[in-house]
Length: 426
Image (cartoon, rainbow, N blue to C red; front, side, top):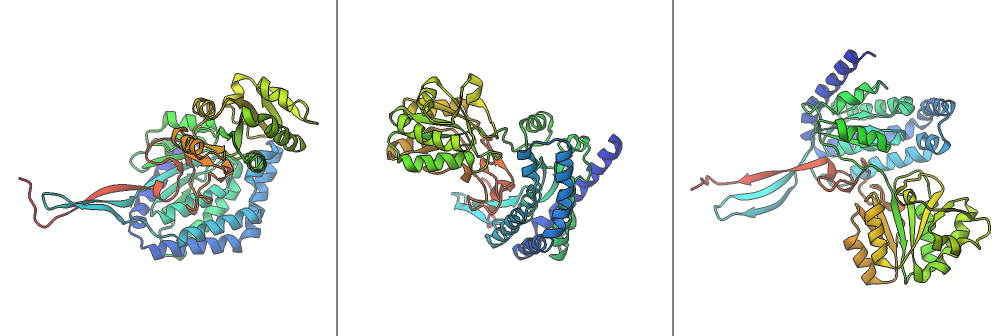
């Protein structure tokens, strides 16, 4: 497709989305929920057919020499599809927040002033690999009364086309405009350039993918962007802590899955518990083949662990998002040093403290400047589904409009509403 055609196609998608967004904004909750339930049903009915389309993407990815963890992200297994279907049903069961009025207060003049929650309008979503994002984005868009234009990665084009078709089928079944969810059908990168420079049609852009993609979009967009660049998450093991629990949680935070952005990449350990904790977690990581890049103090304590893969950490390691069986380890004096390290090196995504000290927990919650801050839980919980948001469109490490997992509320805006009875201003 040449540049002119791409521009024309993208403009058409924009115009169609804008038109559909007006209809979606006024759609009753029952109709939006009907579309979500239809989508859940279609995902289950079409599981086998979807895997046929998905297999083509997987075959292409392997032939292109894509690393296995990245191929893994592309898979639409029955389990992944069932999670997508459950997400749609969970959203359908949630209250509809569109049109709710907040904080209505009487003013001295007699007028009453409040704020009404309304859809943003049209969002564009640009994402790589995981095709299940197509369903997450579409379902959240439907529930929040928005229209969206989706641009998935070229590596998942067959899967995304098949999923988008089911979404449009579900919308039509519920009597909603099919153009409320549109997939950019071309893999031409020029389509992204077009999508992010159409403020007349698109109200916000949400990129979800590698740092390069997000940096490019943040730089070139003429539309507001909700973004997170990377997930350098930390688990801090405090003194005092329950060592057995700390081992279990730190292990899960790193090894439950290596590729997501909420996996812990850094492990900080208070000096008072370091010898005991590191000997135990070191054995767990050694058994799972996790490479440990440590400060001199942690390496000395990990040295006796049989089979441990130990590497001296460099300054770069403290900022690294590995997405692999590698973790950086540092011994710190205590909670103050841990917080200082996290605020300096983390990507402000998700950071956790494992502790028995209530005051340390409270200090960590207050002072760590991240979108999600946790006490005695795995960073792997930083996820819209786990937070009860039904699904998420992504995680924002920005500080305004939306922060943390972006669910329905993150796709809405507030407008002021004023109720009067003939009042005039003096």
